[in-house]
Picture 1 (cartoon, one colour):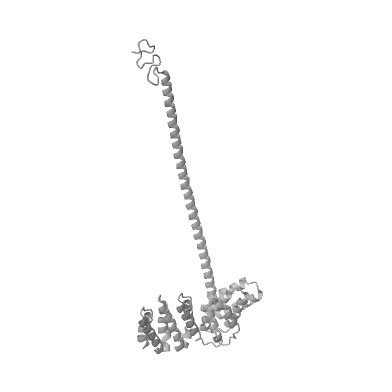
Picture 2 (cartoon, rainbow, N blue to C red):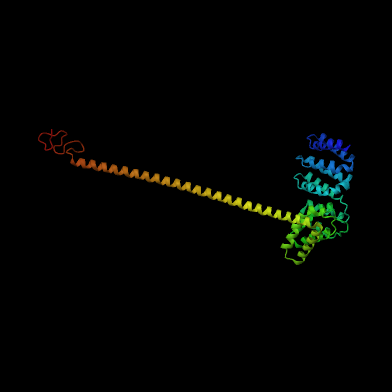
Length: 351
């Protein structure tokens, strides 16, 4: 009956959990809870969990909140099935820990604790609360490492156990203090001895191998370097040759990608600087051109003014010379007889 009832109604009920009506939301939550409670545990891997994962990508925070609660409910009703799905579920739930809504944040932490508690490894079970706290609060990583250091690994370590521990161990290898790095190395070394199959640890090789190699290469303390080498050797044996090569290849590819990204950033910055420099040069050229044009205009204006003044002086000089040669004065009277019209007896008389 699950393909018809659960497949048909669970997704719709989860969508309605984001309704603007409180009555509709309450009814949708009750419906989703009842559907998961009535469903067979064997329907979880292929039917219920895929629907929950799809609804987890909703943009409505109330939908995410109810999906996380239903996932925690699944951990109670079908712990064995959820335990096998931990490698898939933990990264998805961990991503919701950093949601901006505090309700979703808290629900993700509770859900993560619930699903991790379904793990069947009795050695790790006491440390799970500390590990989950470290996942939700990175500043608690050291405390989780200390609890794992006190753990004696006896039972086989499967993919579900690795999916719980590896994120915290990877973060421990990145800690600043050498003692914290040492704790992570010791836990990895002990854990790797009991890995069931290379396939179980293969997905986590790219997460741990590069960080262990960094510790081996960069740390100055000989004891810590020996612990890191021991952890790397045990992990390499657990991974197998093919998985190790793949982990190394993934690490190299990741490093190459970082180098390419850095090179691209440098090229982009260089191009931006070149464009800025070209713009500055063009601006200076334009300003220089305008300055030359302004100076040329000023020179032409001054030259025109000088030409006008010279022409005016020359004209005045001509008038003065003409006045000297003329028999008439400035008043128009004859300079000899003093009359405007000379008498016949005037020296300057002319018909």
